[in-house]
Length: 426
Image (tube, rainbow, N blue to C red):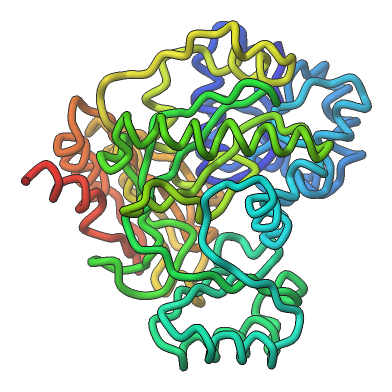
């Protein structure tokens, strides 16, 4: 069947790469796509991912049998509803269900109502009231813009002064636009983070292999938060016992809660967890595959992704036996100099073929093509991904790939998977 993937980043490149491996996949299209997908998909750059009508029209014209939505914005704009209304199967939640990511206040209130473990919190629409609460609670403390902020609307403040400055930045200076007109202020959970992506058809929810993202820009988890500088899977902190507990206390209850609220959730639900001394607690839910977690989770999937996505859309997920590789995968993000702040675009990238020959898969996150040359076109430029028998081997292979690739000002962390390696060393 013909497939349409909506989005143009590293996550979507990975989805195209994995879907292309299925014998059930016919022609794959990507809106807008990126140069890295060119061998596996037809990229359609002249349609906006916010134009539901145009995307439905395109899907009909190309006789698309499955639409896969990558980013959160089209989900919160109701693209799945539009496809369903047109009789086209889509993998992803409806607009109502996607509010679990679209509004952090909705998400926190849902968890509170249904007893799903998460951090203590309060919600504010006025800066002065938010500041009074911060002075009352002290630091460390977490401030989150309520709406979508491209993965950057969260500030973990180590001091009271940082927290107060974050309120000014989000609510007064509108650093994240209207997304910051309301904020959620949370206690700072202590523990180690893990990402648990899941497949769900609204009734059954199946966890994928666990992973761990590296949000901070610099080695040693220093510097500003980013969209993610690298990741690995599986995450040793998410033991089988922890995953089973998360299924029992978090995943099954949240899918039941969404059903009870009239917001049946289908697609990929991302659970960002903190593994605390009291067990797993939810940091956030996202309404789609994580980026860059997808780049390490899907290479470990042995089952047919088309089958899984159709089962999620059709409500037959319980009939599938989803199989995973026993190995490990690591992704190192190569970013433009200055990211996540201002950075340069248009720098030529060399060494992509050499990296592929070194045994890595290079997923394009922020690239474009100019005069026949691949150039930088974003903050996170490439995700250099390696799969191997162990985390240690995958780390070595990924960095061998990174060393083959060059562009002006390239930055990347040198310590991806350091927590996993520390656990192995013990």
